[in-house]
Image 1: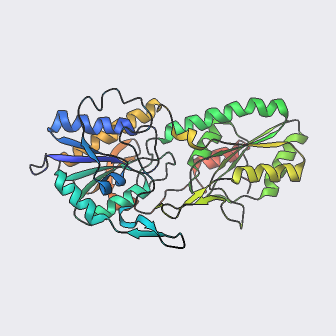
Image 2 (image 1 turned 30 degrees about the vertical axis):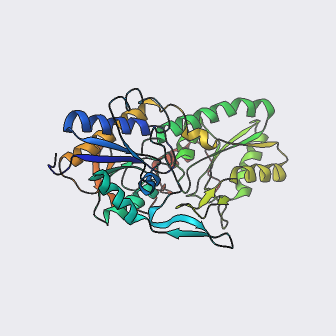
Image 3 (image 1 turned 60 degrees about the vertical axis):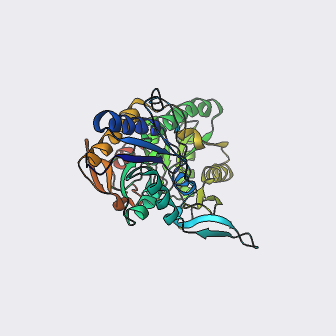
Amino acid sequence: MTPSISRIGVLTAGGDCPGLNAVIRAVTKTAMFQHNLEVYGIEDGFLGLVENRMRPLSREDVSNILTRGGTILGSSNKCNPQRYAVGEEEDGKPIFEDMTNLCLRHLKRRGIEALIVIGGDGSMSGAANFVRRGVNCIGVPKTIDNDLVGTDVTFGFATARYIATEALDRIHTTAASHHRAMVVEVMGRNAGWIALESGVASGADILLLPEIPFDIDKVCDVVKERSRYGKAFTIIAISEGAKPIGGEQVVHHVDPTSPDPIRLGGVGERVARQIEEKTGIDSRCTVLGHVQRGGTPVPEDRVLATLFGYHALELLANGAQNRLVVMQGRTIADTEITRAENKQRTIAPDHLLIAAARAVGTSFGD
């Protein structure tokens, strides 16, 4: 371990995700058992830095949390220290201030010399702000959307994919019983990984992804053709960021105080309504929403989170500065943390799984 480092901080920022506690456990136990480091848990992500809410983590704090969903430290997807809402103007518009210097003072007073930042692209953008101010940050890639640049996979994705697949499997039986077109809307923002992989795994008939704009008339043609040839139902997996050709994404609401103000949602209901209007076939929409982010992480995510947390501490032990832990192929590696700043890893239209899905008759509405 670099001699000057004796105390580190760990935080979980952005939306919650299965496997967060597994990383906290791996980071804390590796720091204690292997490197004699003190670990402070920063509560509610970057908000804890602004409000100086940090606490030392003990062995007891991180025992028996491997299988628990959520995060024992709490999280926040609204706090950007560079643009922190401190009030409102008379017209209701938020007033923002840069709280970076305040956060730096809080870190100095606590004696925290490096940060483990567990999060997605927004969180890595927040970490990059501190990197530019001289704080050593090691990033751990978290998001169910699987859209972080630099890594082939993020922990949390496997659990979300499993939940979405199980939901699509269950939808099959009710769709067949009522001869309906069933639309299942999943999360993913601008990346369609959840919809693609859960859709292929469940044998969905139509997959609508942000990366491939769809033609609603072609979607309806598939539904009608299936009905004409004796297939009494159609299963459609749609990502919340999917949009029609020449159209826009459906925005559920805008939160001006959040670093990521656009909240997508509602495209599934719109597509279901259009299918029913155009085909006369009874159609329904199910929105999985936050159920994809909750509950016990699957074993794959527990293992990956443990590997990521361990590697983050080993990077610090070897004097690494400002790295992002990644999975490349089947190998744990690392890259510059700023590489993931304000970027998203989306699906290439010629992706092998898209080609395989098309080969077995799956439609992408294009």
